[in-house]
Amino acid sequence: MKYTLKTMKVLQKGDMMTKSDIEYLLKREVSRSDIAKALGMKTSEFNYMWLQMKGPKKSEEDKNKKRNFRSLDITKEKYLNYRKQGYSEVEIARLEHISRKTLFNWRLKMFTDKELEGIPVRRGRRKRLKV
Image (cartoon, rainbow, N blue to C red; front, top):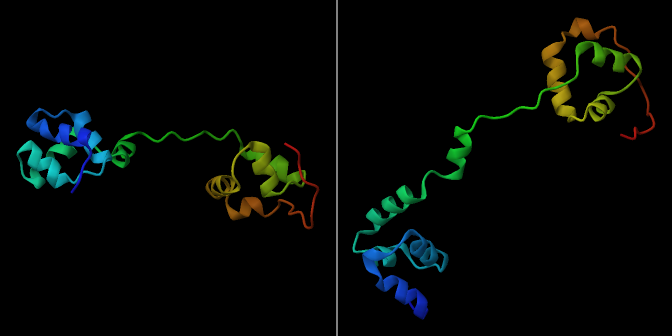
């Protein structure tokens, strides 16, 4: 395969290549087998070495991080007050700056069906809230 002059010079460094040289070659789409030959090792050895040099994949790093959940400021009393005023679930979610799905999941955890029986359910359309 044909490579540019600079790429050939980097390949000629042999085992004196640095991590940045290898990154340069990979960005230039030089095959891993050619890089391994220049380093004087098997392709599988190069692949293993490269994975060790790069560190864990980003997805593995994300798994190791602790997830931060935003706390909800809404209380049962506040929710019931909104419902008694005639606000819909979507409007309450908009007022509290959370998604409708988050509010729905919170409601399932906080209330039983019997607790929600007495809450008036508004029918029809209402003017859009400006928040």
